[in-house]
Image 1: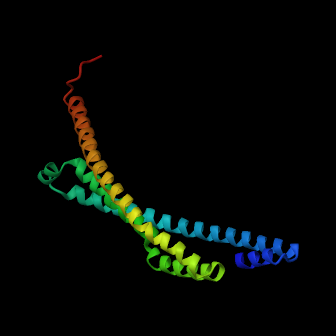
Image 2 (image 1 turned 90 degrees about the vertical axis):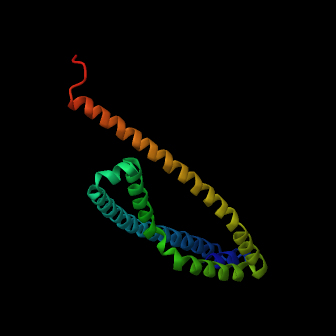
Length: 180
């Protein structure tokens, strides 16, 4: 439709045909947006169910760990592992279909670009995209390192919070607080 609209504008065709092509292009964009949002709605619901199931199983497993092993690992580490593992599995179904659809989309777009722009400009665009892959992998590695540091800080925070809560609990249980 876009190619037809561009050719129509280049040939200065009838105005009504141009408006109809533009409306058809807008309508197809709206339909595409609705379809993508419906897909993501279903996938996010599925992911939420998977995450809930995994968190339940991980906490059930954590309840079965003996206290000596819990003490050696620390509560913060266990809780952090549980939430991180669940979060990683939560994201998996969202992007799993990209394994087949991304190459298909790239090929389809390249064929369309070659038809509209001719081979050289289309291949230059592909080359720029491919050249930016190392930059995005550098950014991804930097984010992974930052995430690792954040996980360690989260472990420490959860451990400290657990100790404070246990201390408050001990004070309340043994009635060591001063009466008011």
